[in-house]
Image 1 (tube, rainbow, N blue to C red):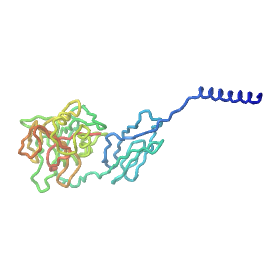
Image 2: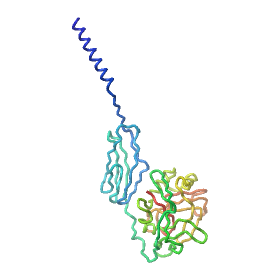
Image 3: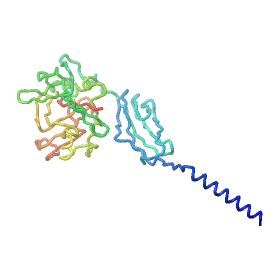
Image 4: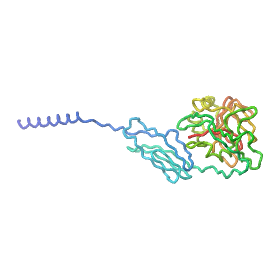
Length: 317
């Protein structure tokens, strides 16, 4: 009986000691990562271009938010802490994997060759650009993109017409939209001029957009990568607080302004073939005989026309 009594006391002491130990210790709860998402990642880069992926990790209180980055082909792109660097032409997948498990996100990057400037016939009538600047210091952040205002080149004037009549037809330089009846600030460029001057039209850190950039912009604002009659989308593009677009005009291959104050076209550097390229067009209430699918508004981030057409250039980063 005495032995049993002392055994009970020993057990009680152990229980009390264990409980006291638990009271003094903090219980650590590990919250695992459940999802990783890239926010509006681009899909196209040019050699030596860099792009920083923006990542959302859920839940927000995950214990370990560290990511392990990997490129499927480092001859195409490399990645370090979310910064992707284009190395060579090709396609590669960048993967971010949670350090505490198997949750991951992927983005496919295609590195494209710089457009072939040699396609453009060299002539003696390339105009001098003069001072190249934005028509204002305004910049618009839309998703993970930042857009400049329109580009103006002080050395281009209305004496430098687009030449759409020659057999080559696409060596035209640029033409300022200032004329007897119209006075717009930005310069209208042919795509030939955009390709030729692409490294000086936009300052360091900026670049002339590709078609994919326009597609990203439009889809972020609720549109689609194609033609659409969407007044709400057009209003967003024209809103000074959202994208700050302006309806000015379009210049034909012969330097004639048309659709004044009804439309604006913005060149990309994405070629379709030797004579045509992609651009973004925005406009409203135009001539229904033109064959456009609009009643009140029209937006298309993958419209295509001849490279000798005169369009506005805005830079992106």
